[in-house]
Length: 448
Ligand code: NDP
Ligand code: 2IT
Image (tube, rainbow, N blue to C red; front, side):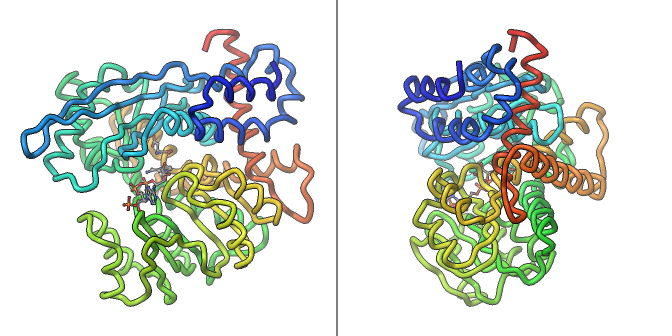
């Protein structure tokens, strides 16, 4: 079955899963040169196999709210592909979570994890539980209830979850506590744990910092650096605020952050004091808009951050937050680099538009791989029951991000006929990630 036939099959079978189809097509449409060079991939139906998860586990979560009422949510774990190691990927708690969203995230995770060069397969999970407006005790009860179900399916050598939207170190620690309680095991079954009881130093910072390390390599490839460059960041969560922090540390100018309510614009740029304030504000679930009263700037209710002139954007909130109209505005405003902190933040049309206009584009599966990479370092620290230092993890993270950049750039040079120093990171990253997984499947024969 050719790749185009495999796409048709996915479109027919999963017509009701638009995000999943979007993620599959993005990979499929860029790996053709590699696929053509390896006839064994088609013989062994590698692509057709990879678009079908090993299994999707779906379960009910009953929990009790503060009024003593029973609430019922849906939970999932998509165990997509373990060709390279245990299924690995985060858990998302957000009302928009459904099978399509988790399958797109799990599919992307396979190739992202392969790009890190570490022994981890791809998976994703979560729930349609909405943490907004819930009390601390409700969050705790939900996390316990979620793991009461999930623990049947995960294990340090089988499937290792972590955080994602709505799941940070607090939630991971509650889930880990329930896992330990039920299994009497103290193992690396989940990553992003608190430092001091199994968590790795720098896991919290890793995704945002890693994305900026990737950006540094992109800029260096064009003989530029980040100093003085204007950057638009979206989101105000884990990835966004750490990406913003690293940009500031390197003397870039972060003009925006945002959330589901609107955008904060500060023409003077963020600094460490402002970022610390933002972190505290989000931790306490307080409005971003209050920033203006403390530091000045402008609050744009209901607006995205893409209307301002800048050099770089780091979209770090959620999928499809940059559409074709936004892409047109970004090109018009002189944006030259797009670095995806989030997973699939650009629609397919937006990607086409910016690539057509030679904007350098780093897809999430390459640029935000630093988080899962440090998760994998947490797994190995847990296995040997030793901790690495901050400096050791940070230098590994830098090396991993540089390797991802360089391998994607090399594949772009080998397979894509680009001109004027343009690097096709999307095709390059897809081909490198895909090849590592495909070669493992070929080596295994028809199992896996
Ligand atoms: P957080 O929950 O910490 O923060 C999410 C941020 O995005 C919040 O500011 C939130 O605003 C905003 N947001 C979420 N959904 C929407 C929406 N539908 N519309 C507008 N804003 C929205 O999540 P993370 O920072 O962990 O994750 C952000 C992105 O990065 C996701 O795509 C995730 O998959 C990806 N990612 C995360 C990694 C990690 O290590 N955590 C690793 C790699 C990728 P509000 O508070 O108002 O909802
Ligand atoms: O999308 C992602 O890579 C994550 N949410 C992190 C996954 C992980 O296992 O650390």
